[in-house]
Length: 612
Image (cartoon, rainbow, N blue to C red; front, side, top):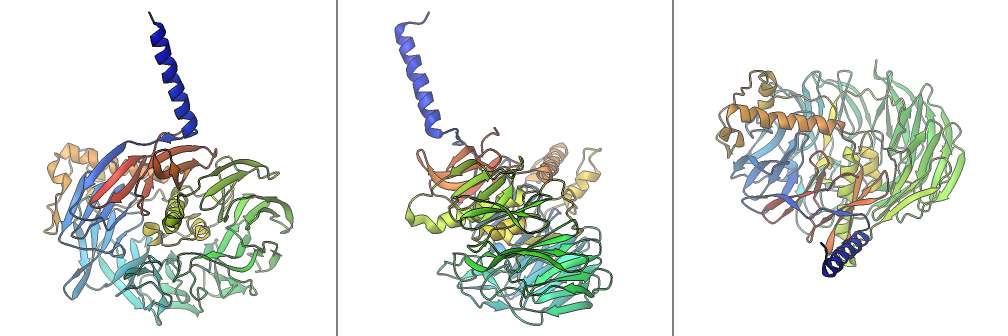
């Protein structure tokens, strides 16, 4: 039987719960720390891989850490790697390491599960900048640059070298040094000390039709097996001091479409000859190919190579090019206050945003059908969510609009804390956006059911995937709009044996090399080994099917600073992760439901919270 005292207590509890709910505004705060891994020194970098292995570098060691459990899978002791020395090969269970010892450098292909080197070569030297992997032929093209360190500045140039390997055998087929130096991009533009430089300001190589295409000095087509040159057209790829001012290539059954010097070209896949070339359209950072028409964005925001803040360059607009003839069907020049990436809302509508407005264009004529004020501060990207709504976002705010009449459907804003952390806010915004675009799905910028013609079979990797060099959200949206984890996956290490021996429930784990210590698999019996390895493969399959929904913002939370996660399908702020001292390199992993961050010598994992 309840007394009056019990009733008063119950009322106070209910009132407290109500106040809490109102204060959080529907946010489910993820206070619980899932795991902590204490390492042997300050964490210098950490990278996620498709298999759910975190590769972590300290001053003295390199670790492979189970992202879901926090267990150390393996450790390489007595080595100090820079982040650009470590590169996961896309679509495989391999990690490339550039290992320096005295005055010698060697390249190793390492099993992500065990840390063991499957093959080594001393023919490739320098930091691993970009890669392309062709699964059908097991060819790997890796681009290296030596001594790519220095204080952040524009005009830092090196001469990259391309090496092509048989990935399974570790045999080098050929190498090619670029004829001239190209400008590189620092990983940090605001640092006072030496930092690694990258090729993140260029599009990575592509394998196509038995050819390797390079995009550093214009376009170069090389025989994939021999390196013999088939085609070379040299021109300045990026505008001086800016990154990614020319578009990623687009491909259909007959042609590969490239841009450079403001011109768009169609190159025959059969003979390498130029079928047509447009007149000068201006800077062309984005091309989308749909049903015989190439939609080209001109102008936009671009990362500067020597400053943390992006730069705006015009002229701003959209052009439609007929792929059969190269005829420019129409040009829209009405976005005179900047421009975001393109979004194809449906087969008849193209959407872009400038500083003030969301603009709807008729895809057939280029005529403006509708213009609505979006009121998003520093609008940087346009996406299409699962409901088919157009989502306009910037560093601090995101809003959704109906694609038929432009009505504002929802809006979420998270103001960053104090003025003293502007650089941190920009870095966290770039990091959060890059993770969303990487795993947000293939249809974030193009309507579902579109006949996107892109028959590029190779998988590509750039350091941008690891460290989000670019502070420019427009370039991030454009770069990652069509790059996502694919179903195809090749195994070369212990996972290959696990697949073969699954029925026998017995995995033979090779003896570790002298470079590897603390291998977790050595401490497990055969059945446990197989269970652990199978879990990584299952995680990889989940990741391939994943479509992320949340974008994170650094803001004030009740009780401190942290990350607020906005569901881009509903606009609801459903997640909150309190991080008193944020690490701008954080990684969110929807496949495991965890967020990873580092502090001193610790790698920490926090629960992201449940779905609504």
